[in-house]
Image 1 (cartoon, rainbow, N blue to C red):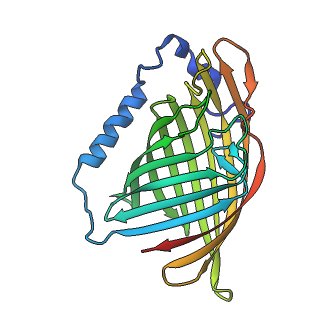
Image 2: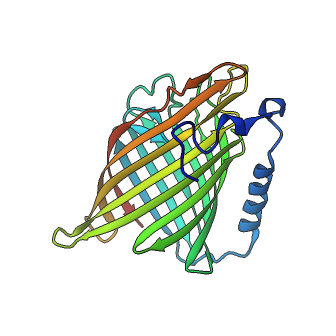
Image 3: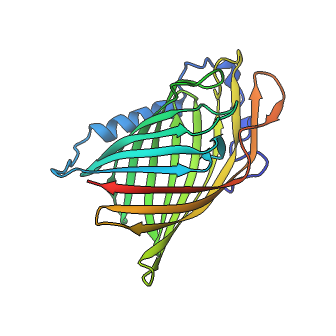
Length: 278
């Protein structure tokens, strides 16, 4: 279904009865995700003898996550290892300036995924992320856990990735579609890597320490382009620009009125980094 500018695929009516359900009680979708994740990672895996590891630090002018501004400029680093059909790593974000009242500050996330071929030249990627915010204050949890499931397909050179996330801590469901396409520039020895994402979400337990259940729902999208430059066989520089926006972003605390989510907005930001594989 198309995303709606009036509050997203998940409308407030989707959450009828949520306030009557204890926050510790897992939803059917949460239990389904936990079962699928356990099955995916307990099945036989093909771990290669050679494991490729990469480190990718980058400076971003604005920290953005799913339409929400998480602060100003930040140093964001990914350390990832992939062997066979298994992969995992750690993603960190270190604010370089004040994050403001609506941002959790320093972040360190651990993630794990598995790539599984399916008929039709497709791949299925179950995964899970443990988000941690060691300096989070009122309104933010110190940690949340989010399984996910993605389907990867390539059509006419464009990579399409529909994905569903289910945060078991926030009791949040996110539907997302990603697209990526590369345009070669042989005369310059590089390429233009275009990428876009659109998503819609419903978070049933969005904030901590407010004394009442907090729901949040809305849409987000972002589109950008990056230019990689190969420095050596194992190292390359990356410069990119992205525009991010949100629509219908709403929060509701307890039985109070619906409010526009102050964490969202529209903005463009720059990223500069490098990636090295060893």
